[in-house]
Image (cartoon, rainbow, N blue to C red; front, side, top):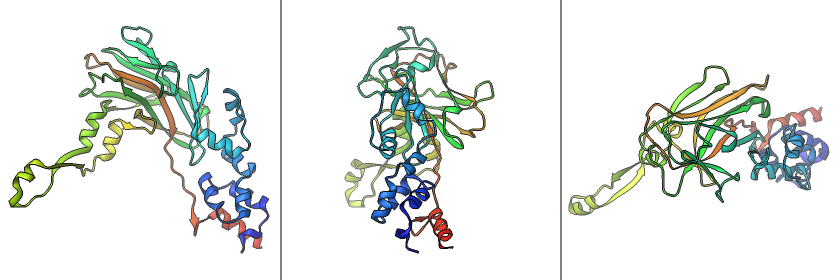
Length: 316
C-alpha cells in the first residue's frame, strides 16, 4: 500500500501513537508525512496531560506550536516554585523530569554559616547552591510526590554536585550512604563515593606498551592510560560520580518504579554520619529525578508496527 495516499489526518493520528523520535524519522519519508509530523495533534500526545498547569507556574511561553513547546521543554529546564525547582521533558519519550534545588532539600546545619553557606554560580540552574564549609555530620534529604511524575516509569534519583575551586576534603576515602524509598517505609540503601578522582583512577589504569628487547629504555619510560578491562564497570558507574553535560557531577542515589496508581511520597537521602571525620569543599545544586526506562517501538523496515497495522485496516 502507498502510505502517501492516506489522508494527512489519518497519518497524524497514527504518528501520535509512536514516539517523538519515530515521528522525526518518518517525517523524512515524504511531504505528506512531513506535514502530518508537524501537527499539534501529534505533539500534543507527547506532552504531559497537565502541561498547562505546569507551564502556568513559570513565565509565559509564547511558542508557535506544540512541537516547539515540546522541544523547548526538552532543551531548557523550566523553573517552578519561585525558582526552587525545575521541570523538563525527557526528549526521547516525553517523560517528566524534575530537579529539586538545594534550597528545597533538608540539609542538617544548612542554615548555620560555619557549616554551610549559600552562594551563586553562573553555571548553576538555580539562583543559589549550597556550599559545604566543614561538617562531621553530613546529611541531605529530599522528597517528591509520585503524582507529579510520569506513570509506569522507572525513575532514578541523582545527587548533582561538584567540588569548589579549592577542592574537597574528607571524601577521598570515605564512603557515604544513599537511600531511597517510600516515606515511612524501609528504604533501599547502599554506599557510594563522592570523590570523582578516585572513580577515574579505578576506571583507568596505567599499562605499559609492549616493546622489543632492543628498546628496553623506551619500554620503561613509556606508559599509556587505557581503560581497565573489568566486569565491575556497572558497579563503578553506580558507586562513583559521573560528569554531566552541564559541567556538574552526579551520583545515583537509587531508583524506584512509579506505578502511577496512587500518590506516594518518595524520600531520598545522602548521609555520612558514622565516620566522624570533618569534610568540606562540596557544592550541592540539588537532586534530579529522571526516567531510566528506554522503551523502543518495534520497527519493520523503518516503519513502526502501529503504522503497518493501520494500513492493513484501511486496506480492508
